[in-house]
Image 1 (spheres, helix red, strand yellow):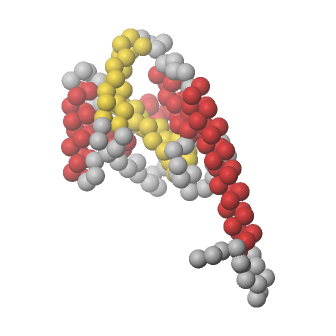
Image 2 (cartoon, rainbow, N blue to C red):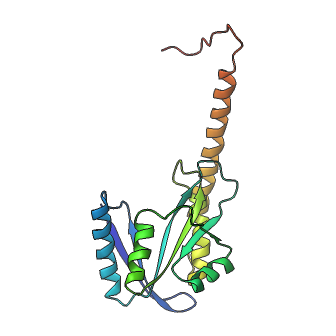
Image 3 (cartoon, rainbow, N blue to C red):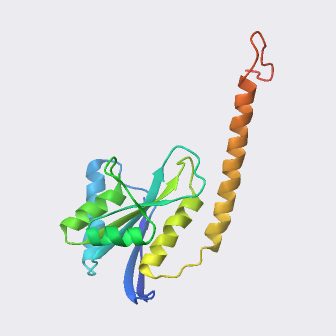
Length: 189
């Protein structure tokens, strides 16, 4: 398990300081989730953090033509800001699970505002196109500049993977449509 912090000083159009957390996993139990999120908040609070942005995916289980960005916020002011950036507000029909939601709730209890941005994705694989969509919104909101060229390349690879998977699915469906009494002799098991 790894959580790494990066620090940007006087960055972006607003010349603000940013602490960026990159992690590869989350706590495996509810207690672990709370403990890790508490430690993260202790750390950033020690540097005077006042606003939290969390990022994640919103899995649809269906192919996504163009990834949209959904969001949630801890104040009406931030809700309006998200709407101005074209973010679709997440309805009350589902919560934000894991660290993305927990950091917002626990941060709010400490007086920090929070935003969660979620890229719409089928949810089957790491989705570079959904990541690009939410990063574009985040970069607009923070007035930071980041080169997304490598992410664009990855998004193209993702599109090819989706296309290939859809083609394989269609071929399987066609193979399954045998006429009564016919045997599919292509499978040897």
